[in-house]
Length: 242
Image 1 (spheres, rainbow, N blue to C red):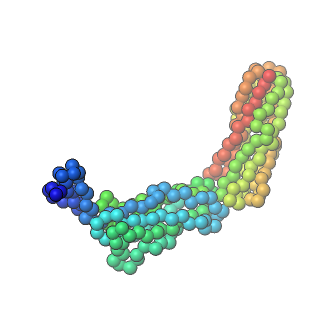
Image 2 (cartoon, rainbow, N blue to C red):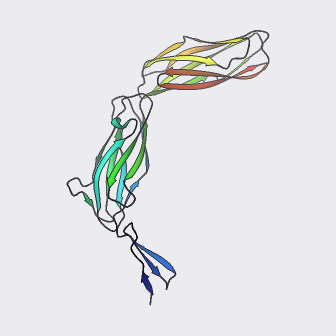
């Protein structure tokens, strides 16, 4: 037969049994415990004021006693833009039986441009404390690209590239653009220097690089940056002087 010897119950409220016959330590969860999955949640990119598609978090009671749920809240930089509905017990006592689970559906409604973050906090009496889920998402933004993204000129020559600013999630606004990285004795300009992006289509500006005959041959990287506070996005162009 199996020979066993019961060890004391640890401070966590769980029981460990030494099974000498099988050379094993048996773990018996007596205390309430909880697991939230996943621990990170990406909620996508959405227009201002638009509630995005919800994503589920599963709260599982993994201990040996009923789990007591005491609250579901948000904290962090953009906590006011995140919301939830759930299938968890609500009336006191809000108990989840061992091996049972419930679902918390989390949504983002952006009120700001660009990336948003927060933390979902699930307060319970589980061993180890409450559960947390890291939340990410985004409001409207824009991307920036160059065509062509390689310009070849001789010393004293000039070249151009079309810079496109494309809205994401109905981004709308005037973006200031600038160019850095031009070699000595050359000039990089953008016409116009500000681009209105209407929300449903890309806005464009033209980059011009003008060199004089004293520019050293070589390969240079031009960086074009679009700024709409707090957003700042960049693209690069390879300039070959030869």
